[in-house]
Image 1 (tube, rainbow, N blue to C red):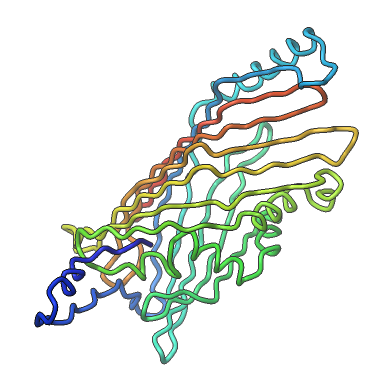
Image 2 (cartoon, rainbow, N blue to C red; image 1 turned 180 degrees about the vertical axis):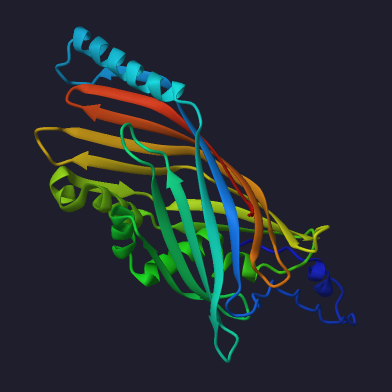
Amino acid sequence: MKKILLASLSLFSVAGAQTSPVAPAPLLKLNAPVGTTVELRSVTTSRMTVSDIQVTAKPGGKATPAQVEEARRAMQDGLGAMNRAGTTTVNGKAFYKVAGRDAAGNTTLINSIVQTMPAAAGKKAENLTIRITQVISPDGQASGLKMESDQPQVNAMFKNLTPEKLQQMTKDMSGNDAGIYATPLRQGEPRTSTVSLDMQDLMNSLIGSLAGPNAGKLFGSMNATPLTVTSTTTYQGLNAAGQHAFTTRSEAANWKFSLNSQDKSIPMNITAEVLSNESSGTSTYSVTGLPATLNQKTNMNMKMTMEMDDIQVSMIMTIDQTVTMQPR
């Protein structure tokens, strides 16, 4: 996932010097026997807060001071309730199964994520399941990525993205084809990369899955800039339990998207800009290559601007999230 600056550059510092080749570092091998399954318990805590709420008349619009004040109070009441809602906790499970391995050593890995979503008022809590299937080669590269869900809207989003697009997205986000399996096991050496992810197709699929067949009527246009992510992974060696330990850190900023309503009965324009997005954490893997633990924290600050009729609203949204995975 990262640029490698090796001391081997010194090999070229003295002309004609005698040198020995640097042996490549080993990789984390996914060699658990076929049929092996690992179950982890996941806990995700999230908190979203809104600050710096500004409600003004749209330049050139016809909103009166009284209408602006009414909109300001409505927004503050609604967003204030959101701030008072506190932290949301979602419990779940993550299953990793070695489903197959061919003669060349290519291993099929299935990751099933099951989360119990918070229940809405008067309704029962529901489970959300996402299944991720991919093939990991002996040299850590991934192929055959497939994502599916039992939740219709989520599944619709996945179906709108081709397998090639999904594979490219995961490659761009991790900086390589298979993330941790392509990271050299060279202790203490950070590996950093900066990659760009085309978000246009993803946002179109997301909005289309949420709005359904009326998406084209509701939204006239949607534009998203590429998302640039810088990630660093450092191998920390074996821990006291004999597991491979890694630390990770990533950051992204200056990502924007805009959405314009095509429905004249509800004219609305939305613009969002990610001011900062930072994530850091630790993970461990067994000597056979399956996940053992995960601890990750993410903080994102986003500026949202909305134009509705002749009223303009802007605010800063802050999202803090912690994800942990431990053996059951």
